[in-house]
Image (cartoon, rainbow, N blue to C red; front, side):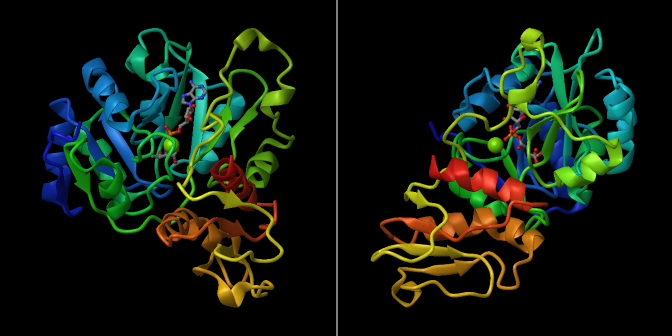
Length: 326
Ligand code: TXA
Ligand code: MG
């Protein structure tokens, strides 16, 4: 369906103003956030949101995150209980999404929330995203700016590779800082971790003073939440098969390494990229999706991945790697 001319612009004030006008006219604009690039549409415009689902090839039962400029704007959309207020105060702007009960008259179109009585909200910590939200003056729904099921984009070139000809604009704000999507917490009962992400679970549990529920532990199915986020099995998937927990390299494989130690067989690898030689998880998160894309292009029989520790940002990294391998 590529039929549009996709304009790639810088992130200067004039381009951001143009992007805001494009959103107001029902257009689709990709823009940087601190986690990954998002594909934005006016959260109140059902026709624009329908175009967004089509451009991504995303099933419409998978709801979108509404991005707003500050917590006050969020409180006009959804009901915050005490834990939600504490989380917003501590971590917004930042890589945290809250799933909350909609307020009556919620301005986010039903199509964007898949008809649920909850809505996902986030205040991104990126100057270009905030300038765009301020310029637009309302909520912007934005999934990651990739074709559905593909690896999330961490720079404008990734967006272009996936969506050129399918969207109106790409605002190039350079490479992102965090590199994995936001952590999603449901606050429609006892706080529940719906997706590990760029804000480590430990920081959230420390603030709340209690462990988060996990989707399998949810006490009542009465809320009937879809097992949210990228919880669709295969997601974040390169075309090349992904082999996890590699302790040695097989012929023809490319290697996604982590840490200072070399693997047996590594010298003959089709390609090698190291998420972080020093074993730094934040550096590994920043590199993850770009390196998966690069190794996917190496013509290898498989991408072997070294073990990554499970704590801190490692939880989100391992989650995305598991889905890439599914
Ligand atoms: O970092 C991020 O979160 C990025 C940037 C662009 O903000 N966005 C992002 O959006 O990752 P997306 O659409 O790729 O993932 C959002 C996830 C979806 O998988 C969806 O299932 C979940 O959020 N979600 C949205 N609304 C929900 C709701 N009401 N209840 C449960 N899950 C919801
Ligand atoms: Mg996504």
